[in-house]
Structure formats: structure tokens, C-alpha cells
Image 1: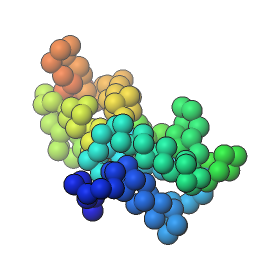
Image 2: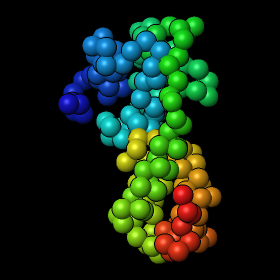
Image 3: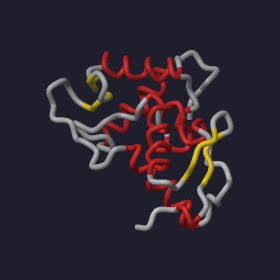
Image 4: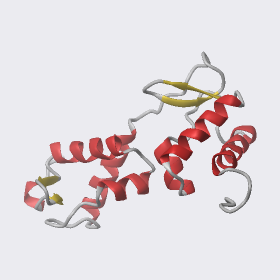
Length: 159
């Protein structure tokens, strides 16, 4: 639980929580630490606070950052554990499954980018990639300046 009114800065408190995950083995050497977007969603903090968390963890020599790939547990040079599937594909497949189950109905709006970002703890670009993939598969269509909507069932791909 974060103490938002106490003397310890939020980024230090979150860094300590992630440090505990590393020490306990919940986050192993080579694994990615939560992204800035995931920290924003999980801890209800600002993006700059999330950046400061990564900076604090680097200062403590618990993690290293690879430009364009993320922040990983352990020192630079440690083999990184890659995700088996891209995050945007996991989200896209979840959206498709929700359409098939009828949770997201034809001609109704898809959740907004902001909702997807919060729900999955991802950055805007990842949410956009997921929606773009689902659109390319014809599960949804976009109306400029209005939003993205679930396609009619007759237009869904045959799989």
C-alpha cells in the first residue's frame, strides 16, 4: 500500500515493492520489470513517477535498461528472457475472444485506447497495435473521429 501523504517519495516506495519481487524470485534475472504503463495502471502513478522508479532500480543495480526493449532484472549483459508472444497479440487475441463470446457486440464500440491501456497495463502504441491487428483481421472497423466498432458477424473472418 502506497503512503501518498508520507515523507518517502512514491517512486522510492514503488521501487521498494519491485525490489521485493526481485528478492522473492517473483521477478527473475533476465525478466522484464513492469513497463511504465503497467506501473501507471498497477500503482496509479504518473508516467514520470514510473520513469523515476526505473531510474531508482538502476541506481540500486537491480536492473538494466535496453533502449527500445525495456528494463530487465539483473546487470547489463545478462541474457534477457523474451516473451513468447508479442503483448499486442495477446491483447488482440483477447479482444477477438471477447467478440466471439458476445461480450463485445456487433456495431458497438470497442473499449477506448485509454481503457485498453489501463486494463492491460500497456503503452498507447501497444494498444493501437492490438486494435490495428484486430481491424486488419476484419473483426472491427473504424469510423474516423468516432471510434472503432465490432463488425457484423457476417463480416468476421472464417477461421
